[in-house]
Amino acid sequence: MNSIWKIVAIFLVGLALIVMIAIPVALGFGLSNLSSAPPEMLLPLLAIFGVVALLASLTIVSVAFSMVDLSDKTQALGLPEGTVRAVIALSLIVIFVITSVFLFGNLATPDTGKLTGLTQAQVDAIPVDQIVSLERDTNDATRFTVERVIQKSQASEDFANQVLTTVSTLVVSIAGFYFGTRAVAAARAGGAPVPPTIERIEPEEAHQGEKTDVKITGSNLRLANLVKLVQDSKEILATEVKSDAATIFCKFNIPEDAATGKWTLVVVNADGGEARSPGMFTITIKPAASSKSNPPAGP
Image 1 (tube, rainbow, N blue to C red):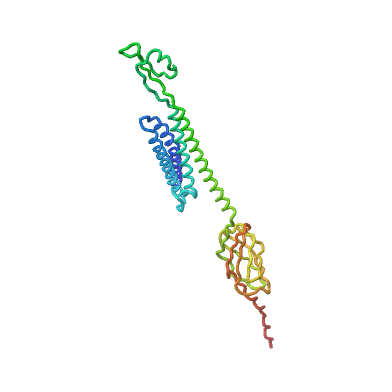
Image 2: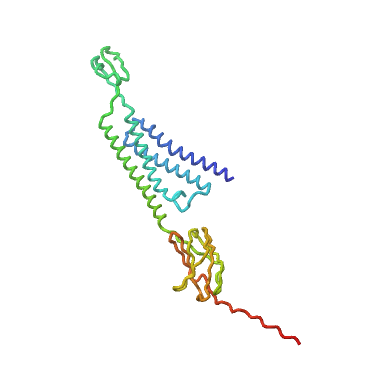
């Protein structure tokens, strides 16, 4: 059953990738050819459709992650931390792609127009590569109707270049901010030591002059390299410290003159993280040596 869900999840992720890539490009190429609609209306619609397609793709990915228990319910859309920043960066990239495709389509696709009543001299003045069709007028054989290519103005090309430059600069800035934020967060997470936690120690007491093997359980104990008992200014260091993520095994050699009572258990990790648990370990008085009485003499 789990394998079926994994296959479904992979299919949904693939579908999300197809939607994320195909829809903005298809919208850009398709709607850029609608010359009847003004560009100032088409371009915002393209951007909106592209961002909606991106959000739909992320929703599909979120559903796929939840099927295989990879979602994080504490984060937006159940996706890993930083998804919101990623959505912003990807949205700007989608807008940049749509804008580029739209402007390229409008500039690359030439406009045509018809000129009627032209003389032969006027027709000869038109460059041959700009003539789409040439027809004689039915009423006057000396006049022609020409459909010719209308060249884009230099102003429109300059405007398109400026828009592309502005949008690309914005995308680079946002991407730099996104990855810079990730790098700073990673540096902070890596630089700040994560302190260990102490939950239990077994046994919880030992006698004076006794060498005791102890087991300490908790979390983030893998880096533990120092374990000690502390009471006021006195310390008893553990020996033979061995640890994993949740357990520490060590030995305490309790001195003969160690103060009785409650001692604080201290665990220090190699990265500087420290945990203290006051009163967790107790040292009791050394028991008196037992003496056996001599058996009574016989008659």
